[in-house]
Amino acid sequence: MKNKLFYSVIALIVLASAVFWGYMFQSTEAEQPESETPDYFDGSFELTMYHAEGCECCVEWAKYLENNGVDVTSELVEDLHEMKREKGVPGQLSSCHTAIADGYVIEGHVPIEDIRQLLAERPAVIGVSVPGMPPNSPGMDQPVENTYQSVIFDKENMYIYNTHN
Image (cartoon, rainbow, N blue to C red; front, side, top):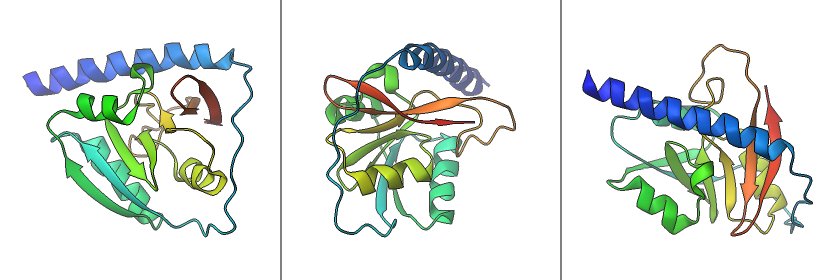
């Protein structure tokens, strides 16, 4: 019971943070970094997801990716916050799992189309994030009306990448 309460409180904090930063990003009018479009990208890729034990939405996100043709390797880590720090994920973009696909960081419940777009465009960024845990994002699958954004980021900047309903 204590574990459920703990994860519920953490989820609410992360969600509130995501809403706050979502409003902050909406006012960002910066130009996105240039892309290096490869000659060929067929939309297929492999991904390694790092997550803590007991996080069921991480498992659901991995299933969602696998149902969309992605080869997912799942690895449990003891200190996910340390991994996020090492991979360059800003705290305000944090979510419940961190993944790596072709050298890019994929943070949180990022939709497949955003990952494929990132891998096809190859912008000069660290990765893409869906901050927090939006209830209607892949793997969360709550039937609520909610708009959320994916954000690409590098060491100094964050840019809205896509908006999802």
